Image (cartoon, rainbow, N blue to C red; front, side):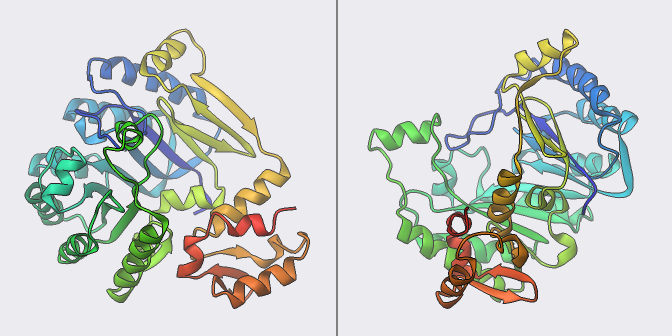
Amino acid sequence: MNRPGLYVHVPFCRTKCPYCDFYSVTSLSLVPAWLDALQREVLIYRDRFGSFDSLYLGGGTPTILGSRELTRLMEVLFQDLSFSRDPEITIEANPDDITKEKTALLRDLGFNRISLGVQSLNEKELQFLQRRHSAKQAEEAIEIIQASGYTNLGIDLMYGLPGQDESVWMATLRRILVYNPAHISCYQMTISKGTPFYRMLKQGRIQATGEERERAFFLLTSAYLEENGYVHYEISNFAREEKTMSRHNIKYWRHVPYLGLGPSAHSFLKGLRWWNLRSVDGYCQALDCGRRPVEDRERLTEEQVWLESLFLGFRTREGVKRKLIEGSPNSGSTLREIRSAGLVTLHGDRIIPTREGFILADSLPLLFSH
């Protein structure tokens, strides 16, 4: 888990979902130029990170790429970068891209984990989210993936939609459990600035889910999935067993080095964080001119690293080491207070958030800030 991870941002989608604030474009005309630029960016970092034990293709919609583009992409990565003997290789997929031929290609290219963006199995919700697939297509995609021999399948779902009924959400969860996926991510809808949903919110056309409703959805989801054998190992993530936890994502939560390639991708190494230009054109032009496509960077201070360690740790079932808070004022009394409030428990030398503690994960570190 302490080896670096590699993330590749595939910034292309057929359509743009109204809630999404990840960078992507809906034209595929720049795919060849992006691949050329990516190859140049790989050469910049080939000796800086050592051997990767995880590769994650995110987006955007990585499965929008055809067999030729996906094959070339993997050749570019494995030709000049070093990987461990048994890397976790994940690709995000949309249900409407999944066919028997596509899954066979992904297996041939070395992908051993698929993260499928289902979001909902309710037709009205899928239409509201402007997803391209139907509930039937989503289930067919799951069946195709599992029939092709994939055992490490992750399903991405979304709750807390404006006006969402708990019974509808639970119906989706129950249906997903029929397939017994290795991993389930349940993301609470966030309406971010700059998205169509944000404009609709400001116009009064939709209403945000209130804090109490969000809390109810979260507690219901966590309890139900844990009752059905899943480990709630991070605020939004549930795994059937330890080996099906996302090896790649765990690196972010542990401050392990990671390299991000592609427009808008972030990287972290030895206390330095940097992020790429949020533009396919700008990214390609920079690399064409022999420049790194970096938009900005920051050197984390010891205080920032410490505070981030608390923020990230309280989001996971690993929690934080008790010694992390020992230097903060009133740490003993603060710890007693949050224990008595049922927000954390102590296991050996670690402070572990409870289910209620997960809800306040972003607030807990501030109680110990210097």
